[in-house]
Image (cartoon, rainbow, N blue to C red; front, side, top):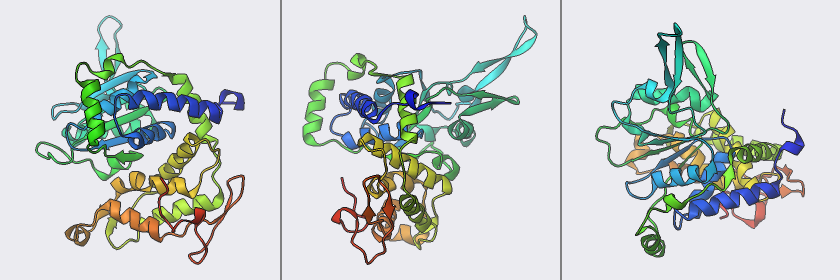
Length: 348
């Protein structure tokens, strides 16, 4: 049982997270919002899917996050000939001992980098399902616990589809958030040429936090308060995806849980011990969009899942009356929105 004294304070959390953030940003130029989301997912005990075109730094982001924390790291290059046992491990018969010995696979690490995850066969992709949800691996009837903290950072290329296997809905649903890095600005790209032109910045990257520090920060995030009306707001956002006319598959109850956990982590990173509706709004697209399937008509109308989520955020009533302890009284559509914003407008 973790006691209060074992948990990190919010000051410790923001200080440690700021060190990790600066370390990652020394490699990933001009993308502070992407780095913050990566930290949010880590502290919320989730997994991150990085989806973007080649050459924008997907694997670099995953490696920079892993090297900034003093913990075990394994990288898996997903290919069509990769076997499930290469990921989970295999039992080998020991001739001397006359018994089977378990040889752990690459999944037995605290941060696992899955590069080009959609290039592996569906059979190999499914080897990650149990580990990502239950944080254990079952081989030959025996279950093996995975280390803590545990995070899968997977990358995939959405434009080059030859020889790839799209992730099924069950696999995408296990990722807490999906992020696209995007192209850098001209200034950031120019700075990248100066910094990365000679040597890789990863070579000089040193850990700025330990694994046990991250465990304490995760415990602090768990203690963040979420008022009843804010929880209802999270349920309203997710429930709206299940009845939206442009979607044939809405978000699951797991998505509601992931959205709430991510909001608590975001609040902690902002130095608050309570979550706000703003935290849910700011994370709704990243947490929900990759789980949704638009209808055929919506695809013909070029309506993306991200646009649908933004529409839902705009239309869902926001709790409007707040108190100092972070509790809220839910408001209707006719009441003024929180912070004097329009309902659902994201505050950056």
